[in-house]
Amino acid sequence: MEQTPGNAKRFGGEALHNTENVIALDKAVHTRVSALFSRKVLRITGSRILTVRQWLSTQSYEAQREFGLLAIQNVRSGIWP
Image 1 (cartoon, rainbow, N blue to C red):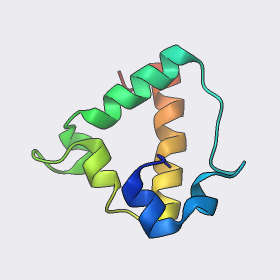
Image 2 (image 1 turned 135 degrees about the vertical axis):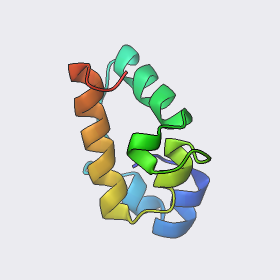
Image 3 (image 1 turned 180 degrees about the vertical axis):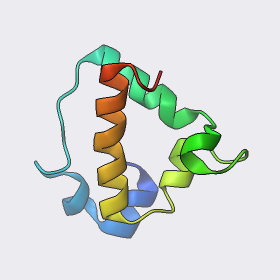
């Protein structure tokens, strides 16, 4: 789950700043995941208007965490650019 002001407000700092939520990534993977979250990806969000980050912000803590782990896995394996 991204550590955004909106998520901090919704879920609290403890939910964001803990070992269950923080994952060490190398810079290249982090950059690619961040880029993915900034794009509009219809097959992920179902929307032509929302970026992945905007869409994700409407999801529950659990859904955001699960999606984040999937995004890291798919970016590392080259499934998602």
